[in-house]
Length: 506
Image 1 (cartoon, rainbow, N blue to C red):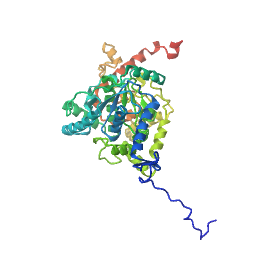
Image 2 (cartoon, rainbow, N blue to C red):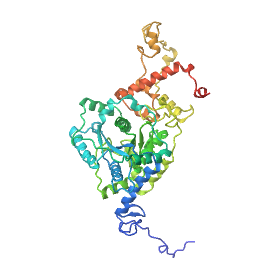
Image 3 (cartoon, rainbow, N blue to C red):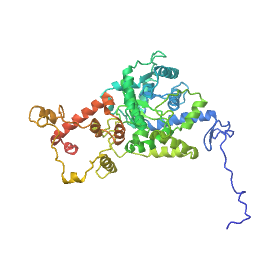
């Protein structure tokens, strides 16, 4: 029982507040220079060792990057990607404890045309980044986003996989040491202030493409898709097998919640995992996924890692401007009061696996036209996806208002609004063959947006749905859509002559 005169203040322990005046938890000697979490205080030297070890451990644990591989570093100028560049630079230095054994290159996608930057601003930004790239000593490529308009259709087609099994890693190390090919690639000889010439018409077409998306959420997704297509194409043309992305733990936690909100639950394993092999021959890796944004900011500040601020689509927007912006605001504010928020979401993402076909077993035609992930729309009729589609169709159906006179004297139903004999599918002439193939018919065709629905996953379908017209999409996407439609029709015609997989194996 509680007593009135009982004193409770003597038994309470005062919470110990982390302070930089404490000793380092690792060396126990030097004074702490940074406080990462409660109880984790590091001096300057120990924090650098801790930061470098985490990067090396991430690469060594997964064994995706083999010795001698050409790896393309996607540097956007932000703090996370620039910190990744510094880690690779440290790992290839002569005094590195465990020297990295791959050949790096750098790529920067100039998105100034999509966000409305002027030519002078884009030149200034590229000049600052080129100074950072030249200091690293690696070959670099400055690619304007307008080049996505000239990409081939093979970008959105999964190529033959070049991924090696983890058991061949030791053999690759021995072969690399025997060849003694530890030298880096020579930097490209470029003018420090040179910027690839971009036609004004391409910039205007790109801006029309971005603006055609009605919401900022759809614009953000569309821009990410185009950027990834251009990264994969650059890696293929320049001979790189892997592409390093600078996504950190905080960014991936925000991306996970955003993807679930946008209906990308089936693609979470590819969007947030360490490796992403959806393109087959090019593997996307995320070596910075164990670092929080706080750790990266401390490291860049203590060791003078240069970064360049580049405005994006959501710069100076409110927190409710898009789903991505709202999720970012929610996670960062929650992280202030609950420091384990980001790590909890991130650890959950490591346990997620997709129930769709794997990247190696899925057919090329069973992939999304935009994100190149396995389609998640081939589900049973009683699924929640089919229920969503049914609800959407019913909500969009418009019924005309009927009066009592209309009910008593219903209007006659016309068989066709097209004059008799004018449609090429109605006659038996030579045009009827074209009508059966879907070519040259004068009847009203379905909108292009409906034709793309079967080629897209649920999330990408929502993005295209927010666009005013799909005619603004680049030609390589529209050409690939037409090719898949033709192959689908051809497969339907000869379906009775095809053998199933089970029958073919017997």
